[in-house]
Length: 319
Ligand code: ASP
Image (cartoon, rainbow, N blue to C red; front, side, top):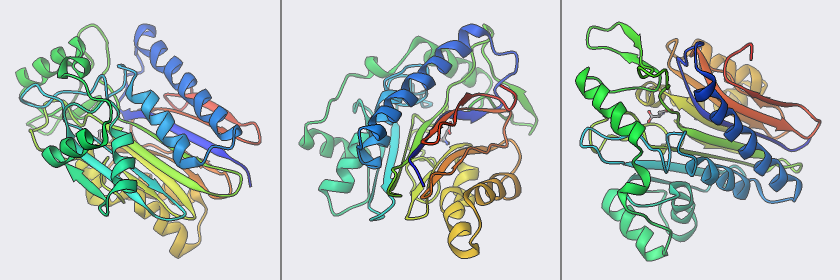
């Protein structure tokens, strides 16, 4: 038994040839956000506060596909989405279709705490954000030059871009790093458990490059991209449609609940045996402080620390 935290900055076919210039800022960001989460857990902050804090920080870093730095829709706009869940109470909140909210994860938490609902989207979510007085910004805050270029490339190739690779129209796959070797970005998520076994999970994303306006992925869907109960907390990343079909986050918890298997076994089974190869990864913690971070893609930006001193920041399996 002990506290533990794990976070991710997206899974995909991250090219092993990733330039140091692309790799370094993301690894630095993972270290930085992990540190913030660890300090918060050590200061006895509730896991729900910890995951919100860490995901807010990740949303503010433009190298990741959430908040500032969100990828663009087919109309060149941002539509951000997020969710958060408390394991002990199973209270949860989710938002989609945000265009002005700086920290989607905090609005998801407000949906959970200030409304009788779980999920608000588009106009209603924006209206709720205004009512709550959360920080908003003009679209220029979220849209980066890199994402304008990514959308242009995706449109030229007539494709919806799923992270680092995506099926082309003819069903083959190609690497989608930009000509300058800059990789596509990743959704962010964080899971945490305190030394009393309280668990929480949060996930936030801009979705997919060139996604159709109105498309909702797995990240705001409780049970698909995010889940937490009294046994574990899970945040998923990858191809949203595949993750939705497989209800990945809930399946990990269900394996533990109904089959009595360990977190490691459940997470590994769901990612490696239930999901098509190259589609998903997740970070998860259990009530007893175990961490699992399996992925079936080439890599996943990820980091974790446990109370007993284990710490890792990694992209590929050998790094
Ligand atoms: N799962 C996200 C989505 O499909 C993308 C990602 O994880 O990078 O919207």
